[in-house]
Length: 38
Image 1 (cartoon, rainbow, N blue to C red):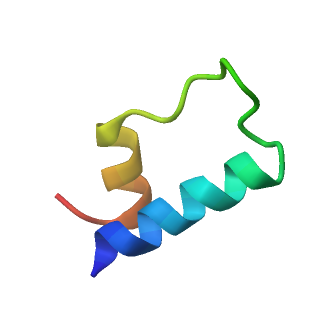
Image 2: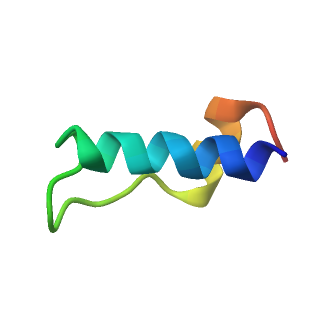
């Protein structure tokens, strides 16, 4: 299930500090494009 992969990636980016508090997360469209889903 692709959404699980995307969620795990976002969680990892947050945990590693790549997405600090207050940072904007990628848009749904951007996530879909990056992961090859519609």
